[in-house]
Amino acid sequence: MAERIRVLLTEEEVDAKIREIGEQISRDYAGKQVHLVCVLKGGVFFMCELAKRISIPVSMDFMSVSSYGSETKSSGVVKIVKDLDEPLKGKHVIVIEDIVDSGRTLSYLLEMLKKREPESLALCTLLDKPERRVIDVDVDYTGFNIPDEFVVGYGLDYDQRYRNLPYIGVVEFE
Ligand code: IMP
Ligand code: MG
Image 1 (cartoon, rainbow, N blue to C red):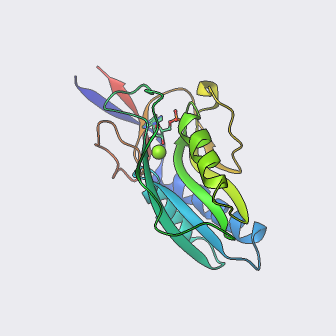
Image 2 (cartoon, rainbow, N blue to C red):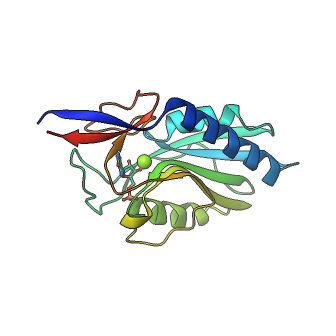
C-alpha cells in the first residue's frame, strides 16, 4: 500500500517545544540530578534533543518494550525486550516517550518502574493523543496534544520506516 507523509509539526516547532520542556525540567529539578529513561526506539530522538536542553546534571538509561507489531493498532500485549542497565533506587527518574496513545504501554511500564523505588518518577512525552486513551496515565510533561491520526518522524515509525524524519508527519494512505 502506497502512503504519503503530510507535515503536522515542523522541525522548528518541535525544536522550540523541546527547548521549552528542557528549561521547565531544569527549573523543576533545580539543585538535583535527573535520570532520563528512554523508551526505545521511538523515544531516542526526543531524549537526545531534550537532554541537550537540560542545564542540570543528567544521566541516561534505555529500555525497550513492545506493544505494537507492523500494524497501526495496539495489540494490548506489552513485553520487555531490553531492561535498564542501572537500578532506579534513589534517583529522580523521568521516563521519556515518543507518544502516549492508548496508555497501555506506559501504565504497565510506570507500575513496574515504581517498584524499583526511585526517589521520584515522572513521565515526559513528545506527543499525546488524548482521544485514544484506554488506560489513565499521569503525564507530567507533554510536547503536543495531537488528533487521532497515525504519525511518524522524530523517532516514530510506520513499519520501522520514517523514524529519521526531523519533523512530525501524518501518514496518509492512498
Ligand atoms: P500505547 O500503549 O497505545 O499508549 O502506545 C504507545 C506506543 O505505540 C508508542 O510508544 C508508539 O511506539 C506506538 N504508537 C502509538 N501511536 C503511534 C503513531 O501515531 N505513530 C507511531 N507509533 C505510534
Ligand atoms: Mg514508544
